Each structure stands twice: as structure tokens, then as C-alpha cells.
Amino acid sequence: MKEAAVDVVHKFETDLYCDLTRDEVRERGESLAQTLENIRIEEEDLRDLSKQRKQKIVLLKERVKVLGDATRFHREKRVVEVEVVNLGNGMCNEIRKDTGEVIRTRKLSDSEMQMTVPKIGEKSVNTAAKS
Image: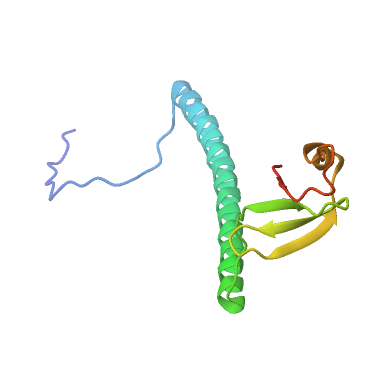
């Protein structure tokens, strides 16, 4: 019997299911395991990145509070040099070097008293202790 001639109009490709060989099944299994591991790694990286972003947002919010307070109250905290001045009665004044304002009067500490021991014959000592 002779086959009838077939007149092919055109050809095309499409996705169709095909049976896999044992080697192909093993390869797909290895790819599946590797892909699952990659997902785990990416999710862990995402959690770490999220923590970093949250920490950055916290720092930015703290900065907003500092700037807002400075704007609202017209002042901010700064590091200011302070002199400790012995008043001669076991007490001292802490004086701002930038404005001369007495910020606190308190007892001299033991170490400050050691620094300001009066010389024989002196009634009181009014020298600044370096601390």
C-alpha cells in the first residue's frame, strides 16, 4: 500500500508534554533542590535587608526628632568645655567656657581635692581643676 502524498502547508513549534528519561528526571530533581536552596538564601537576604532598612528608618526618625526639637525650641545639645573652679570650702562651681554661666555648684570629689591642695599659709584656693 502506498501512502498518499501529504501536502504540508507550513510548520510551527509549540510546547507539548514529553516523557523524560531517568537522567532527565535526576537532572530536574537536582535543579529543583538547587532552586529551593536559592529561594532560601534570597529570603534570608531579604530578611537581613529588611532589618537593615528598618534600622536606617529608626536612625532617620531619631534625626527628625532632634531637628524638630531644635527647630521648635531654638536650642540643641552640643559638647561644651566646662571648668571646675574650687570655691575653697570643699565646694566647686562648674562653669561653661563658652558663656561663663555657672551650670552647677557641688562638692569637690576626692580626686579634685587632691589636685587643689592649698599650700602652707594659704587660706583658700580658687584655681580651676583640670579633670
